[in-house]
Length: 528
Image 1 (cartoon, rainbow, N blue to C red):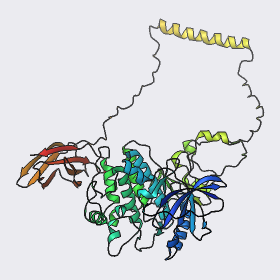
Image 2 (cartoon, rainbow, N blue to C red):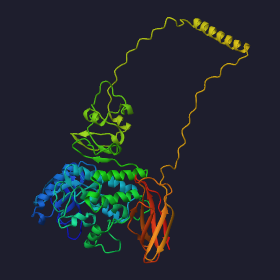
Image 3 (tube, rainbow, N blue to C red):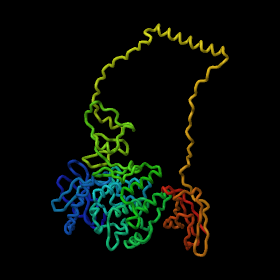
Image 4 (cartoon, rainbow, N blue to C red):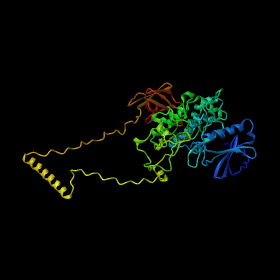
């Protein structure tokens, strides 16, 4: 929010006590109140008196309804109530998120790769939930992602949200995170608009500034729009960012809407694949939907997506409740789980249905069993003893007689074999098996070798060799200087020609990337 004007006086709200001002914007002020019952601190967003005309009140009411529809999602700010103050100003009572928003956090320092991926997946899941409800956010940016007391991102400010079918101008957009089509003579908005903003937001967290902002340069609105429309996405200047992450961001922020991920959940899955590549914990995708997963959730990616259904546990069970987790071969399918009283599969795949609407829940572990009162098990009646076979010995004396006869027979066999000059056959041995040795370096993508460059007139040509070529290999390359890196590009042949750098020394970095997105280490060289 902006601090260019003084905030209006806080309203008098029955059941709430004013504490402090949290921020001021162009349309509303946000205050910290303490609710008396239940006692808790809340954020109250109040529309400015001079904004009541021109449809702002209706827009404010629409925001309340949208947030009420979506706020059960764990990555969307919860709205508690809405109303009209005594002085006639509409207000929203919302969850109070005391931590700095992501814009403040990113300005103080870039996020780690792990945290940026986690936040990206969670916020993309929130956007996907809104899209499935027919709502576009249209202003996704770091400043609109608050942080809860439990350090979880919470998307807020649906003030300019609209239906997914609407193609009206995205008024109130934020230039640094808006796609090129937002600046055309006939602005467009759609799912692809929010996908672009998601990619721009993750880029901001990783870079510490918006994607086309040039630290120390001209960053006015016209400058940013010119770069957004005409320049490629700058490469992330950090050594711990894999090429697969750069490619995912470039696709999410493609100039043409049709070249982007076709949904927010598709972008979230791309971030999950980067997590897997880096051996990070995979962040589940929490989606609120009115229907079970459709065919877009393929087997490979669907297991990382949680679309929850209800699990009903009766307080008393007959017979007594047994183990709290089923064996793998006893786990029902998703379809079975949705139509039975209990359908948990444990871990990230378990689902809980609430009133026909799917919502994320905390994975169940065995510790929860201590809170469930088990039914008293029915007494076990003494089972009849098994009948004794007629041929079994009936006394200790008979047992010793049988043992003596068996021993005598064994001695006779051994003596007979010895007299015949033979040897007892060797005892059969169980063939031993050993695991097939595994190659610990298999799957590692090699670096280009023999990278060299030559200068001819005003151009520099670089060549290299792929030591282990495979179908679909490409090469990501970019020029670099002492002042920074140039825009990245890709080729499918091991050679690149580019203009000689004005400094007289031309340098490039080259990375081999497989068809599945895995990349090796960069190799660098300078010429002449």
